Image 1 (cartoon, rainbow, N blue to C red):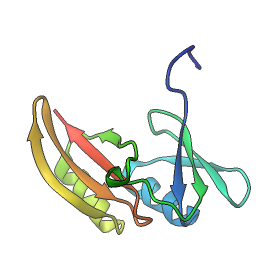
Image 2 (spheres, one colour):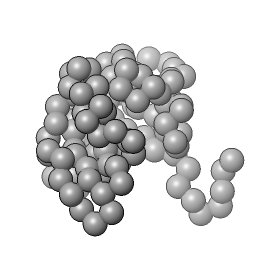
Image 3 (tube, rainbow, N blue to C red):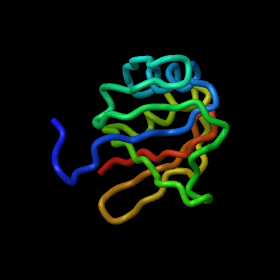
Image 4 (cartoon, rainbow, N blue to C red):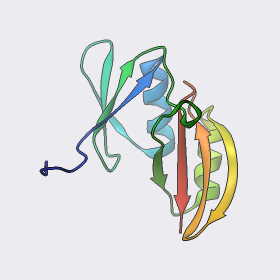
Length: 116
């Protein structure tokens, strides 16, 4: 349900929508609804959003927002990311409240995964 003044939707660049869909379905179990050849909406991700066809990459070193997923098992999620051709870009580190690591998807977009 949409709520007034709340984050409602995210859009992320993708150089190859098929690769994005395969990666996030394999690693995180997301679903997808295609809207033409240049856009796909992701579902079952905790928030709705989409990937749009673009040559750009979302990376924090360029000022991008960091999308962070939660995992009950960081090691298992890390192995799934590697198996799906993602790359660990910042190894697991501790912070007040938990641990996390950063990774890039096969299109070069940066994300993070954390656990308590």
